[in-house]
Amino acid sequence: MQDSAKKLIMNWSGGKDATLALYYLLNEREFDVCGLLTSVNKEFGRISMHGVRQSLLIRQAAAIGLPLEILEIPGEVSMETYNGLMKSKMLLLKEQGITHAAFGDLFLEDLKMYRTAKLAEEKIEAVFPLWKKDTARTVREFLALGFKAVTVCVDAKYLDDSFVGRLIDEQFLRDLPSNVDPCGENGEFHSFVFDGPLFKSAIEFEIGEKVKRTFESAENTNWNNAFWYCDLVG
Image (cartoon, rainbow, N blue to C red; front, side):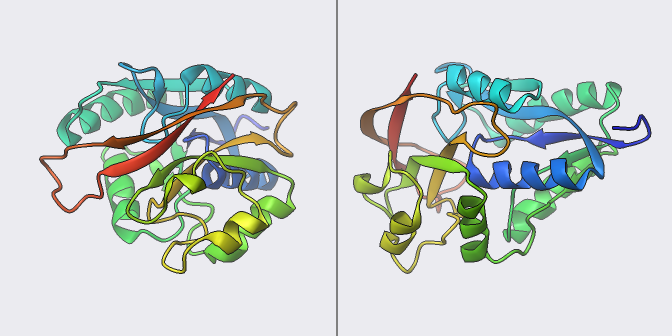
């Protein structure tokens, strides 16, 4: 990659959409992808929202071959606190030459506006490689490329515990209720990618226990707050 290439950090959940977005970025070579940035709950040592162990995240980044930047956030965190922590991290990355930050979002306009506006405050440009792509085609492209992912968290409002800890494949997609987006873009399910064309080797793990967790949010009373999680042990 030439020194003049635009330096980019990939906002990384470890899931399928972020992985496919990264695949596009690395193949199109418009940007110098300098690393992966992941928010981790420092109380539990797990990826925020997804619940994947930090040890698996570290192995995943190593298999992909990109540096991993971890943003530690408290177990109970307000949006104000989160925004402050992210601002500090982005300022540090900007000092290292980062000019762009990429996300795997597909169609949530309010989330795109939020990300774009917050980054613009630091003179960093947001990039959305998957934006407005058809979600049914996108998840099947992900599978056709040879990526493999397992669900680690599902919204209990939409899916029961039989959908968590499950390989994402054609049968999984056929079994999804009609009101669930094929990519889980509305937060219906989250995943962990463990193999595929970006990986030097597959991430080995075992399916652990499933638990249902309920969260309280004083800031958003309309938020779906019950989720099934599946622990990945490895």
